[in-house]
Image 1 (cartoon, protein in one colour):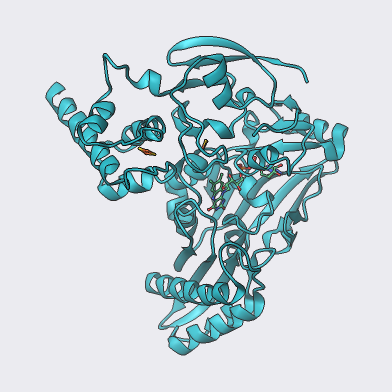
Image 2 (cartoon, rainbow over the protein chains, first blue to last red):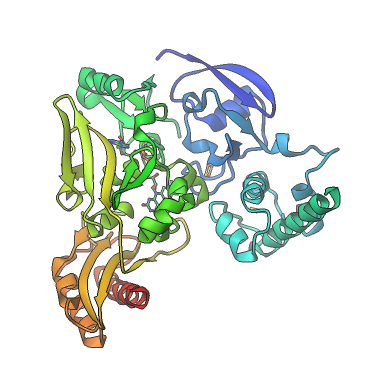
Length: 163
Length: 284
Ligand SMILES: Cc1cc2nc3c(=O)[nH]c(=O)nc-3n(C[C@H](O)[C@H](O)[C@H](O)COP(=O)(O)OP(=O)(O)OC[C@H]3O[C@@H](n4cnc5c(N)ncnc54)[C@H](O)[C@@H]3O)c2cc1C
Ligand code: FES
Ligand code: FES
């Protein structure tokens, strides 16, 4: 089958990748662009470990063909923060033990990132509902919810201080 | 899991999409949000040599409420349903149902049209469409036609839509009175073990109209006319609710699967319908 030239903006950089239509976005990100943050957990659209932010939506990258994403603006965990300049969410996950093995964490934080843009002052219930598409086999979710709540209040304090 | 190879098309209008469908017949299929189709393609249970992506077809988008009629384009996503003020006001039952479909990531991608056209008995919107007595509009090589949602489902994955037709929109009257979409599932993001859509209107202290449909309790969604009739004219008392549940149980034919044996599903269906009626009545 013919390969397509596909333009993607990923973490602020424009890319032109060559892919067969059947190539899934998760494989383009991991194998062509060497972004190993988004993980492959279940491959069946259930676990959310592959979550990326695409044009303002949280998307399971294992359930989208790269051709479908042509022309979109994508952010992966690598674009949210780096070890030297961590995002408030990443700091909060470290501070509040929001991870154990860490496998679910990139997807979890990428999803929480969008959730907090849509709802900057979530209740604990909003957080649980909002991250329902991300499975964690270690933490029991308690500390993940705590981390997201802490990040929300941190971001809001920073916003108020800036005003 | 990698699907079999296919050719990809991305038309920006309906005529161009129909032309590909016509040229390739059974070998072509449209993709909307892809959240039912891609998993099937990965499992190689769906073989689609020619895949037509509808995301650029603007005519399939948009929610409109005018003259008491709600019209929803096939490519409206489930997330858009939830954030739409128009839907919250004109059809709050749809807002309530959309919140119970899948999980946030799936709802950003999954569309109204895909959920309705798919024909999977587990999908939540088909039963809701039957409860609302919605009209589904499809367009094909011979033009446009309307199909009643209550006539649309023939068997699992078999609908009245022809292979060369595209579902363009759904429309129904804005709702009044009480409503409830009640769903029992094993976990968030799961399909229903049983779900019920209920719309009720009240006159004085009696039920004047009642519409009831059930999800995932047969190969097709089940609109139970008899269940609605059992409530009509009653004061929605315990006996009337019991009669409605008994009538509904006559109409469903659940299969045993990993959500449980038949007896369990019938039990859950009864509990879910009773709860849905109670909640709808409290809002009527
Ligand atoms: C983890 C997970 C959990 C889920 N849980 C639920 C749930 O609880 N409840 C629920 O209802 N659904 C659930 N779904 C399914 C989800 O809602 C799908 O998005 C939906 O069933 C299909 O919509 P789509 O836009 O993704 O369609 P697609 O997957 O793109 O298409 C599905 C089928 O419909 C056809 N089709 C799509 N659009 C049209 C059109 N306009 N005209 C003609 N044919 C068309 C396609 O050719 C295909 O055969 C779940 C999915 C996942 C992955
Ligand atoms: S790997 Fe994509 S949802 Fe699990
Ligand atoms: S920390 Fe191990 S899966 Fe979540």
